[in-house]
Amino acid sequence: MSSVLDQKKQIVEEIKAKIRDAKSIVLVDYRGLTVEEVTELRRKCTQEGVDYKVYKNTMMRFAFQEEGLEAFNEFLTGPSAIAISKDDVVAPARITSDFAKEHKNLEFKAGIIEGEIVGVDKIKAIGELPSKEVLLTQLVIALNSPISKFARTLQAIVDKEPQEA
Image (cartoon, rainbow, N blue to C red; front, side, top):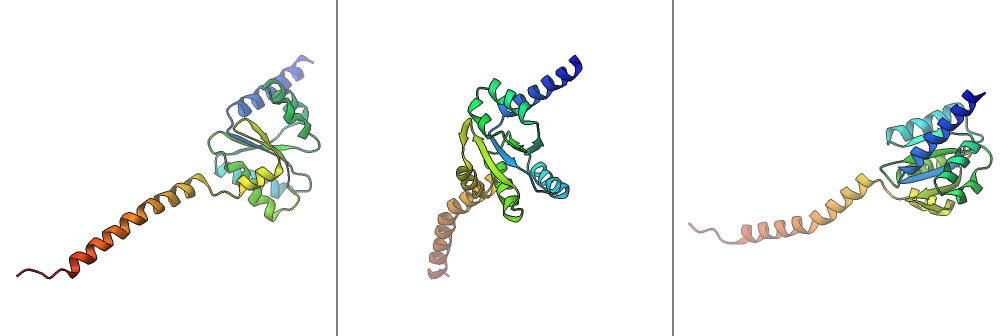
């Protein structure tokens, strides 16, 4: 009997370790998704370094409570899965939001963004943000644009000046 209890304690410790180090967590209801659809979502999450896993609500409830996030327990009803990222704040919300656009059965419950519990609306808003790489690329382009224009202007001035023989 104690081996079952030990297994449950081990699962709670696993969940605690994941949520303790997480930059963001998205809790979803996957009811109505086929096995293939859940596998597709899990694959998309894995490709971007997001851990997507189904745990029993009871195990998650113990883990969130022990990590001081007992207010999150009110969302642990019905079938629940969590998408967790240790690196990218936006990734779980973006991946699940994109997936929910094509698969209406995936429903958001709540999330935790950098330690703050957030509702469905905020998760969806965060999900609309581009990835970190895209944002950095946009920043580089924005910073490079004035320099490029200045260089082209200087080149045009040089090209217009009469050449000395």
